Length: 188
Length: 188
DNA sequence: TTCATTGTTCAAAAAATTCAGAAATTAAAT
DNA sequence: ATTTAATTTCTGAATTTTTTGAACAATGAA
Image (cartoon, rainbow over all chains, first blue to last red; front, side, top):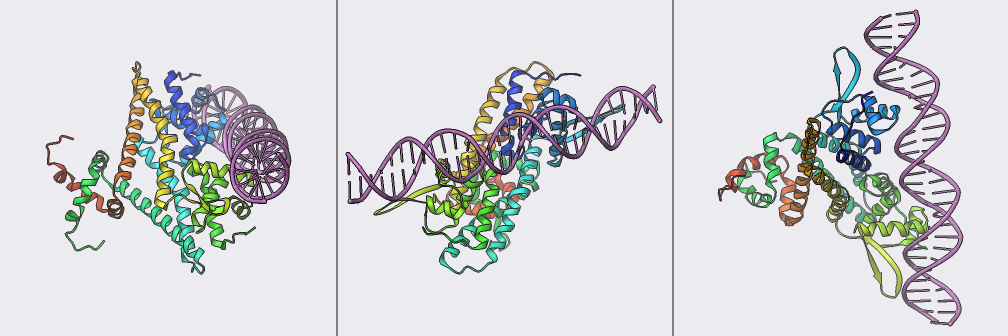
């Protein structure tokens, strides 16, 4: 069994991914696995992962399933070898997008539907009216986030690059926005 | 002891906040407390919170401390009453910002510093070079996020509004960006 | 078919988190 | 200074989550 040897710094990175794991929606070992596969050039087998991280084989199997459900890793096959080799499913940007998308599905969407449901109700008391106002704001905020994330996905890589580099230029661009967009008499 | 009576829907909202709580960085009861205080018009006392959510007084005390450390709630005082009354620390947008900011401080910043540390190292093997490339990308992504969040904070409320409504217009605006910003011969 | 290897599942153990309630502390009022 | 109200801290119990490891299933080679 080949033991992957990670440099000390790389170990630190992988462990850090573990600690951050739960923040991103999964648990420690899955975070570690994700980090490990991301910085490892050659795809790894389940056994290599288990050995490198010193975790049980069963745990790896579950982790792989989970990471696949997030579409963060993909399987590679080598002809004449029936082991499965796992590697990252795409670029860092792709992966960040996946995590965001998946979390949106699990967190924002249910919240939005609960809020919509709630906002249909007629408010009677003053307190209820206040509650609804607040919920309306949360709703609008989440909708905006949703709209924007869809928007970002739609941009071409060049546009994205351009947007990313914009930084503090955003203010200036915004000031010009009206002049640009007011060709057809759109009111919004 | 005045018992707050929440409408059925509002209860659902508060419970939902509890379930989402851990996603946002705190635990169930703290999530519930945050939700409750957000939709309640009048600031509440610790006892009212405990009664409304059926949790222990001690637990509320801890939760308050935590929510204060996130700067999500603030204390009100009523003359001649020495109880403390708790309410949201700002608008929904403010609160969302706080959560984001605070999480950035707790998650992104430590990660960035670990990555920087890592990227100083000289890569020797091919594997190490690959690992560094990946880390560089993560680093750049996180830096961009950081820069952008700072940028958003800097925008005036009107510009923000404008940006939020932009939606699919962003593509078009980007296409014009160069013409707008290329006044001094900036190469970037 | 049998064997060796790889992958999956799941019950039970281990670890981590959350929480209530008691005890301690602080602060105001008398 | 004492009493009373309000708040905080702390501990162990309860709950939830994670992880292991062994049993089981699948796969392909001999």
